[in-house]
Length: 389
Ligand SMILES: C[S@@+](CC[C@H](N)C(=O)[O-])C[C@H]1O[C@@H](n2cnc3c(N)ncnc32)[C@H](O)[C@@H]1O
Ligand code: SF4
Image (cartoon, rainbow, N blue to C red; front, side, top):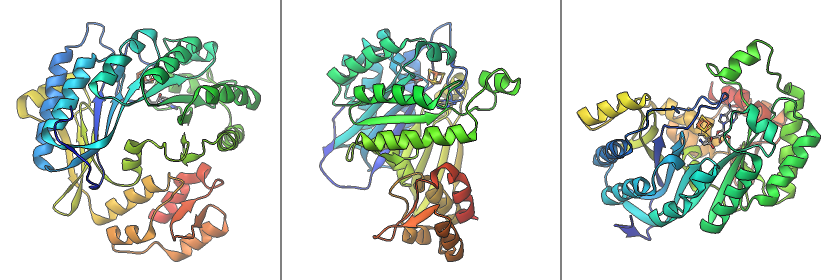
């Protein structure tokens, strides 16, 4: 893939590649993921992704790619040569930074772990595994196709092959107690290297869990227990050297996921594949892009027109600034109020900032950044709404 490599310190530019297929649909998940029992014409989808890369590069040429992320769906269902072909296309149309971070999301089944070495050879240097739980009954309830032991085995394979790996756990699950989560999290941290993503279970509309929850057949921790589970998560992880750098993401300092930081810092990224989002800087303005979500409709669009774009909106300065707030306040490092002013042409309302500060929800750092405090994070949406209004 390393066709045009550079050591420059250009502004970060990320490429997100969405692979929309899974072996089965987990009942809590509302990601753009689809099951195709009849199989997938992988080579055709890969050609279409290559075409979208070419079309995007024609709009934003000359970028230096600092991070690439294969997300899904389940990208670990792709053959390594497909990943290689997509990386080659990225390297053909843009310059690849010599320190590029290339992450692939993987489901921790043994079959998928057999492909890890191929991904490494293709240029992937970081994997993110969807472990979700270290409890077989919970995994079954979550509709997962792997056991806790299989997940840990996949983590061990990842550890042996990739320099960097992370895994995801979902907490605040049905019947979960503080004691059981404490034990599970500690077990997980013992297997983690530098990064963990820890998500509170959310009941998403239009999922089987939503129906079960509404019918009273799926009880999840109430707000108080949810809050206690969150606080426990923060204190255990911080104590183990894995503080939260984002509301749900923990890393040893220096091991943060550079790709996701591009989103949260309001930097530039291209999104290719079905249902991918992008943010492109063109002629001094920021464009929000989105491709067709349904895989086969996306394929037909790309084959017909060279792109699957269905949204290509020029954001107003106010929208760009609000997005910067919304994303940036998820980070422990917070936001730069000066940048907010440059983007929006207005300053953050000092009265609102000082009320939130008095309430203990935000604080200003010594360098002048504004960030949400530990007690403000559980009410982050309200904080953002208050500042953006
Ligand atoms: C695109 S998905 C994962 C990729 C991969 N297919 C997998 O399942 O392992 C990214 C992560 O979002 C989290 N997630 C998805 N739906 C969620 C929900 N309703 N509540 C909390 N976390 C969720 C899971 O931890 C999942 O690993
Ligand atoms: S959680 Fe992962 S495997 Fe399950 S449906 Fe969503 S994307 Fe697919």
